[in-house]
Length: 272
Image (tube, rainbow, N blue to C red; front, side, top):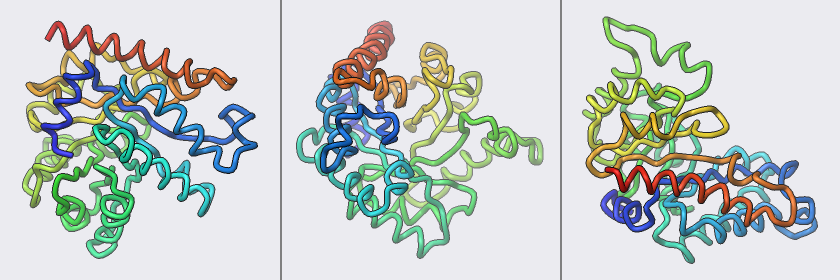
């Protein structure tokens, strides 16, 4: 999917909501556990209930890897379902990969070709040759970890190195890599005050923004500093939506929570 197509969906749905499909079997409704593939059935119900309110879905692969081969099969069924039934949806493999070139090439093939995700999250620490294999796929996107929302982000990402914060050096260096036009960046919502500085460096790229809702990030603050000419934001919400209820009404309740966020996004877009 191209960023132009993604932007068209944002305007059509009046939404830039990304829903994280981070399925924990201890948190989903108990009646689903009796089914052959409870993870997929949970995801399918959430997707069917929210697909018109979201422009992207983001499975965190750890929640699938933890269940072995059955988890991987659930992930594959989930992405196949989205691609076949809702092909307009942008899909993100939240895998946070990052390794030497040959290994990265295999990771890229696994997620962008075999599983056919539109994008994958990648750690930049090992540099250019660990990221460029992901960038080589046409109409696929590499979402680089730039400034994350966790407490430990301050251990390294904001360190001052030769007069400039490390995360800014990551952003600037990444722009020189081959096929850098396919880059997006992860920027945590709890770091809203940093968005203005980030937009000075990457004014045109999409930013994937976790941390709104459960982690305390403010949608209005993120949009104030982060929206660009093509909107350029994907706001992720996971737990607040998918675990809105653990009863038989979990899918309608998930839709209610997604609608709250989408309605706020629509107001922001209308003002813009």
